[in-house]
Image 1 (cartoon, rainbow, N blue to C red):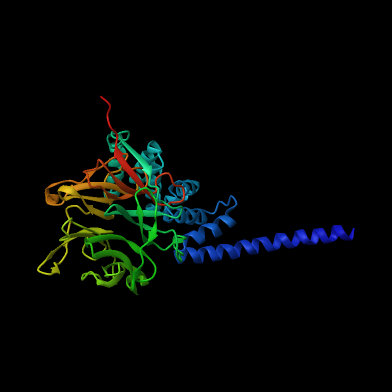
Image 2: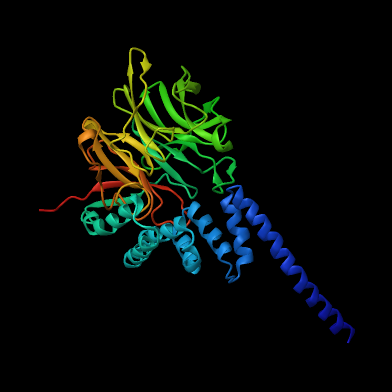
Length: 409
């Protein structure tokens, strides 16, 4: 009888303690969410979810997965609170996009039309509608290439490859301290043989802490690379900047300064250089652009970089990022502002004729319904590398090797 009494008291205590513990986890989750520590917020939110019908909770979990680039899970959570999301036009449109990205094109079209009926048409709805219409044409070449994961990938995220002699220089999140926003390691530069052997980190003395990556070479001894500013800019954030490093006689890379147009108030990142090292294209969200990250070009003349020119004819209200100048002045870049297969798609345009040319979507298999970016090639797309988080439910970027299939006679 005494044992039964103690058991009942223990159950009553658990009933009262659990809700309190759940409330505390919800408070901690909201705090992590407000700090943009989305990976932490996901774990905390899901520990208190347990089938909850709280639409605010469901939306926040969906946003966390969206920021974490797990599009399928984001779409599932948004779908659980669809009626409540109609009062949030931005998320409601994002749900239509996620349906398209995850292969539910008919459902995407239906939600899109309902969105337009409530909120009217705009540039974003036109882009998504064009993407749905163009889907079949973008899939024509999907079987014309072999695409395989590069052998130097890790489980933690690798992207932005670059040819470096007979080796590949790339950005990786495989080691170092953790970024609380993404729950991944801060990025760094690595060098590997194309067969995946002899992978080594490339240390750069006096480079800032946090992220480093996405490099370009003016010559064998001068490297431009993306890193994090040591000074907080707008929104109290550390923005990206382009740093310069020189190679010493003993083979070490040492930071020597910044690209002259960097400013801690905005991002300036992802440089690419022409083969002669005299033309640089980079990305920035500086004031005066079309929206998001835009592409800019600068010419090196008379010992200095000229004032960058905004490539307004190419840029959209979305993001244009990770440019690469290939052969014949062909500029490859990623964008989410044009009609495409979803997320970031890779496009090409002649850098000398960009004012009168519309960037062409490379279509599948270069592009997928997820983020595709950071393409490089030295033989006019017969082979090369690209970055993508395709086939990943956790938003992990990987580098893929592609080569054109040979047609047997």
